[in-house]
Amino acid sequence: MDNSDARLIEKITSLKNAKNAIILAHNYQLGEIQDIADFVGDSLELSQKAAGTNADVIVFCGVKFMAETAAILCPEKTVLLPDTHAGCPMADMVTVKRLREEKKRHPNATVVCYVNSTAAVKAESDVCCTSANAVRIVEKLTAAEEILFIPDQYLGNYVASKTGRNMILWPGFCPTHVRIQPQDISRLKAEHPQAKALVHPECRPEVIALADAVLSTGGMVRFARETEAEEMIIGTEMGITHRLRKENPGKRFIPASEQAVCPRMKLITLETVLWSLEQMTHQIRIPERTRLKAKTAVDKMLEVV
Ligand code: 13P
Ligand code: SF4
Image (cartoon, rainbow, N blue to C red; front, side, top):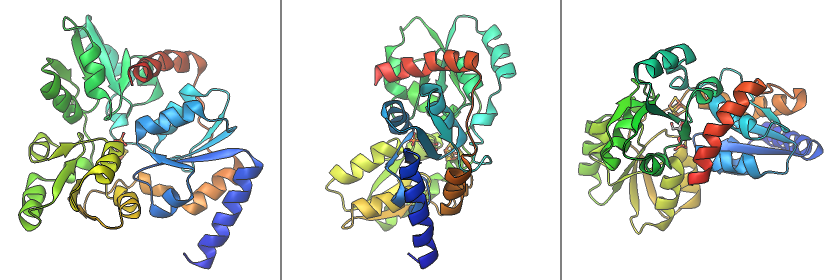
């Protein structure tokens, strides 16, 4: 760490203490952000942490839908997103208008909404899920129900394959995960025959078919800790390798593709975190009617976990 980083971290820590703030960071954040965070986790773990914290201020180091989920759950807290441009492109692939049209076409469908979506879209949905609990959530729905899964077609397809349920899939996708190609996994498996391939369910089905385990980012962290395997091919956004290497110094983690970088996640830096705490910006505010409707869908998800 250089001196200027150390100075930034000192200022962040003292402001954080003065304002009774907590820093929550997603597993894809830059290493220096993961290192200063009070908690690092996947989308589900971060929403659970936000729901349970006593802090007055949550500095959310992740993308906007994650900060919105915290704001949905904690209306009395100030939720800060250090950079307003840190949005998830997949979340913008479904709009309220288009979802309402689709719901009219399938009036009996239960809408299962991946948390990678806006608060307004969650408010139009029946139940949320993350990659960690999507299979369990869909398994809980009664077999008679028609399911409309939004917005990730690949997570939806994976859940349908695991549950045997017939699901209507929204055509959204993650621009970062689709960069991982099946040939990346095959080549790395040939080069590292002992390695286990862990992939995120946002990957294409052809990639998922080659995996030894399909896991949320939190699931990958646990798998890496518990497995006897010493080498792992990591089929998700590369930022997670910082945490995997830090927590498992004796093991080797090979990114499935150097292309798997989420540019929006990387907008959060030590500078923007400090700015955010100094200026108390950018505050995530959700209109109360939307928040209450979205909270019903998020709460239903949290009950299942
Ligand atoms: P996780 O919930 O597995 O952390 O995934 C979030 C995400 O945005 C994946 O691209
Ligand atoms: Fe969204 Fe993909 Fe980035 Fe996750 S990795 S935040 S799904 S764009």
